[in-house]
Image (tube, rainbow, N blue to C red; front, side, top):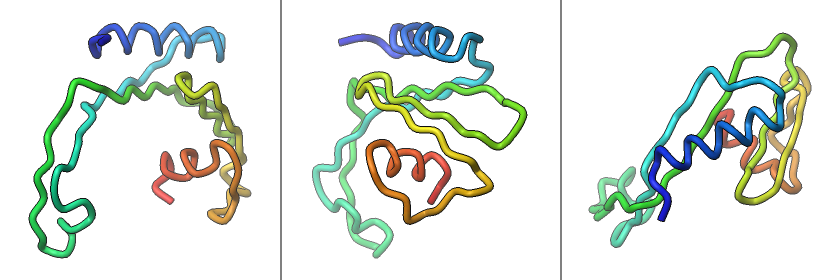
Length: 104
């Protein structure tokens, strides 16, 4: 199982290969499992969640313009969209993930 540092190194190399520049921002979060109460915590229910030995790594950098490009390295999927014309109703490969990155 790769460590978070190994995943960060691999993701940074993939980012640089894809976009031609190194990322300037990095975020890493442990995976988690919910043994009880999935989606009940916001209804005051009990939840039993635990961090696991998996990670999500996200990298980025600011760019000029309003074109947003995202890539899921492990899924070999990418998506690009104009933030001025972004529709929450868009669907297709990568669209759901892209919307989640924007909080939609």
